[in-house]
Length: 352
Image 1 (cartoon, rainbow, N blue to C red):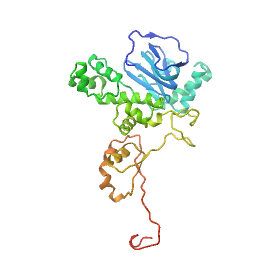
Image 2 (image 1 turned 90 degrees about the horizontal axis):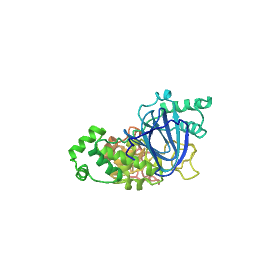
Image 3 (image 1 turned 90 degrees about the vertical axis):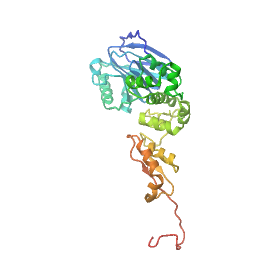
Image 4 (image 1 turned 180 degrees about the vertical axis):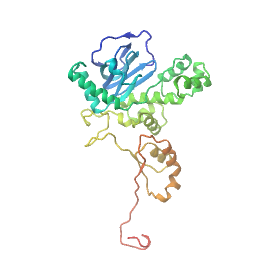
């Protein structure tokens, strides 16, 4: 969905909504004089305004301020929960549509209020709404807004990419197909969307990847479907934008998990917010990838004195691209130990 209908409808119904939406089901463009929080307990919701497109899987909550015209589309079988926020309480939240990471407490308060359609004016409703508001204020926002152009020359190009995000055509080739020069399109991407062609296409692909992953598509298949050269480059681009690895968005098997609602892989107790990734690598490209997106690196026959001469360039290149959300790379070194009777030449003189 890339367009918002020009004749938007003004909605006056401010009741909480719990609604099942089939895959690809649309909600036409509309607006209201109250704020709105939108959460998909399952599936995903795509919200579109003139300012851009937001994708919210089951672990995220979308905020739409009062009077913002917006339309929606479901992705997968979606359990949509919509909660109105009175205008006087909306001032503490962003003035633009936003996506928030939903904590366990935020989800539970949201689900309790929307499922039971608790009136905000009731004592319990006021307490639940206060919890929701407090959690939203401290919740991290995700920079996943995909800006949409208004210039018809640029829109012709972005429409092609929306139709096929995996297309590998260069900006010059897309310009040739739509009748605009590469120079003009490059200028329009910067002036109208405040990003380059490459950045916009990467953001589009990451948004689509969120939807693919939430449906259970593997990380490798998602990377191939959306035009990345290999899973490593996909993981890197995804982590840079989302702040988490794509594997965290894969759904759990039915009936398994921590009970916290996080779309994580199966975990043992106690529940953890993330699963550390340690990579065994020797080749320059593999070591560079480990330094870029892994929590730890497992080299073979590692020597601190000689590491810089063997892997120094690869480590430096990968570290330069490492997300600031990741801690310093941990080096877990191992080696080969010979255990046998003491013999000359097997140990250094003076060693125990």
